[in-house]
Length: 108
Image (cartoon, rainbow, N blue to C red; front, side, top):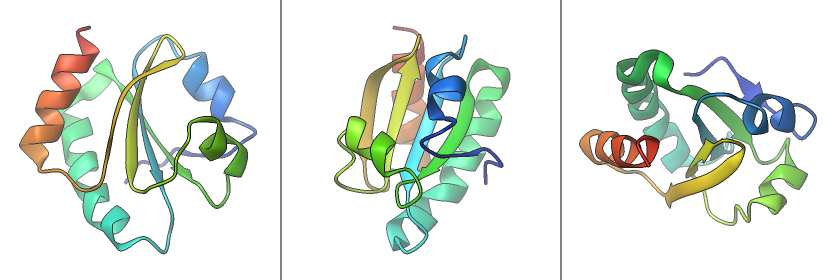
């Protein structure tokens, strides 16, 4: 799992000011699908190496951030580029689908 766990205080500094794309996993500790997707995301992120930054946001600990990005269902995986959300998906997806989605959106 990503060691970078964000909250309302550090989200802007780490995600919005990043020079490279940031993959954000919006989750909660009590969400079973969130538990299922976490290892898939970890594996995918390793394959992308230094092309992206991967962070996680527990929406229970970051209600303002979750509200700002209308995170109403979890897991919600959102990709940010140049400080802006450019694409997202909700729920558990297969590894290959996530890779394809990332490749398509990173190169936009």
